[in-house]
Length: 353
Image 1: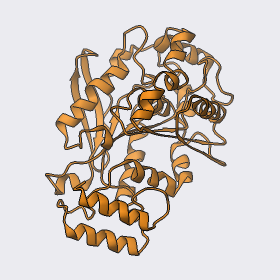
Image 2 (image 1 turned 30 degrees about the vertical axis):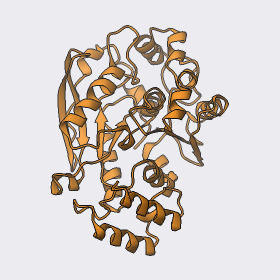
Image 3 (image 1 turned 90 degrees about the vertical axis):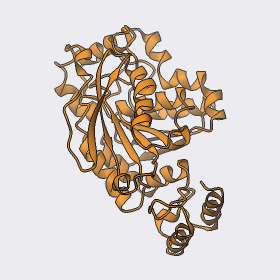
Image 4 (image 1 turned 180 degrees about the vertical axis):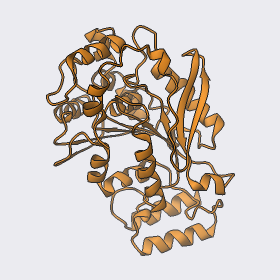
């Protein structure tokens, strides 16, 4: 799946003049397990759409609740990446690399930047955080607490995931920034190689931040990391940043990584040789460490065999995969299957998860 910020922004350069208020609903995307849903937003004064994936266990185990991952798309299209990501996550679940979970795909609009527009015309952040998240918890069988809720995204979505993770560490247990942008300190200081036409960049700047550098900076991970550092640390928020070394976003991400070190924000950092601004290429390059991240940040499921009941058979199934050194036995997500995984599972099982 190619870079939405690089390849698609240029295609959409003439489309930004359309009122953002007309984009609160998107076309329907079809994929196995995927649903198109809408709700009435008080903040937007409009019907708002989103897509949501539920794993097969959601239907087969009608009393079971599931953790939730909010996947934030990149710029240029609110829907182009949904089907490939559904395939990516559902395949991992089928291979037991990822526990069964609900995946929510919010409508971030082509250039919504996951910020409330400074003009007040488009309350994007408010709609997602204060309306969509509670709506999903009220409508689907989620585990409705921060310890079972992750936010992740690529490109513009990575920027949004970073913002949400820093500001709302009381609502998410982890945030994942992949090929994130814009993460420079000046929006109009475009990283070389983005291919974003200057007139489009200026239009986004005006639409989201009123062309005001102070507003852009105040809402950036650079500023938010300092403002929310103490709460972030107290809440033991997990943050990861990954970027390809051939990505135009590479240098700004390196700068942000160093900024977080200086501010004192703990985070997982990885770069990947030969990877450009491409979602799936980056995820594939991350390999087993990608799946270990989810295993580390999400609670250990007592229902290890996914039969809808937590009992001694789950313990026996864990012992079986542990003895085979299967990836699923890496309970603590450290990429090493050892006795610490066994101890963590037994402790979680004894506590009733």
